[in-house]
Length: 414
Image (cartoon, rainbow, N blue to C red; front, side, top):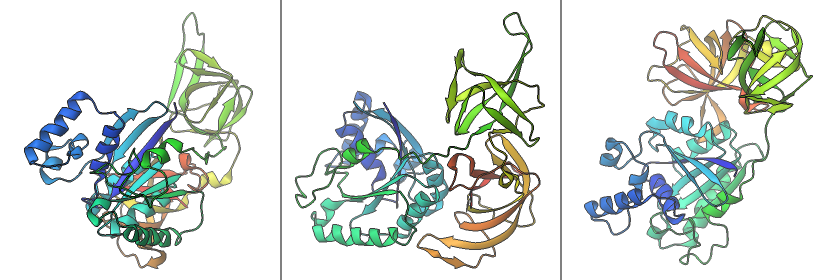
């Protein structure tokens, strides 16, 4: 079964945790213990409807405050599909957690309270889904039960959503807008009898029908993470290079180049655990043996073509600042992409990007926590990055504070 990775986002109290709990409950995916916990907490709080938020809000502080603070990952499967759902916090100060939750997702579910319409966080979450180039976004207009399932309320919000989406360049991103009530279960797994004016799909139908559009780069990129040198009766002078293929494919006989040396050789063996393969592709963790002995170590990159753009030491990138301390142009940071690292500086803060006005360029003197900015980075040595738009697997990076070892930003090469 194909795996679908989902991220949920929305402002505080939009009902993300309740939506996930309802989705699991109506899909018969909760365990007996979880169902007992839901009923117990519902009884303790004196609620009429089941309190599904306890399924995902695992921290005591989350349950006490009735909010989500940390990213929770939920794994389950239906008869036809496997799911991983990342439940991200809704507070603006936890935007960094939302970026973390969405960074590895295929689909983002953005909840909107039908009583409030689009908020600042809605714009921010959608902008992040565009920044991360997620393949599909599902807008769920939640709490329709609190507006008497009014079609006009839904249509007004749907119009606002379309206006927001149209502010961006056209891409292949799929957009769905669904009126729902997580609390009552309308249009989550089962069609709502309270909104007969809605003729579209339920959330479950949309998620089960999702097909990955294959926006994966064909350019071969493989980080060397470890070098194996084995000397025994079965393997004599055996030397291979282990790592995960970030993008593209590799087959026996292919000519590969080693960066940064630029030396080339021919692939004579591909191993995955104990199996010997004819070919491997993106996502596979393999050992590659080459025809020639070349000086290769961790942090180097295997590619199939020589590309001067990979050697750029000045890159322009959009970054999301994740640290309490503001960014500084006088501080040396470490930039890291997979197993490649280098010292870097923020050479120029070009401008800030505000999700509610994505086309405008705001002056940028400082970059604070949760800010999104376009910057120019100067790197001590090339780490062979592609543009994120061309290769998601090799176009993103993190910035680490050299003094504290804290990750202070995530970036995407322009």
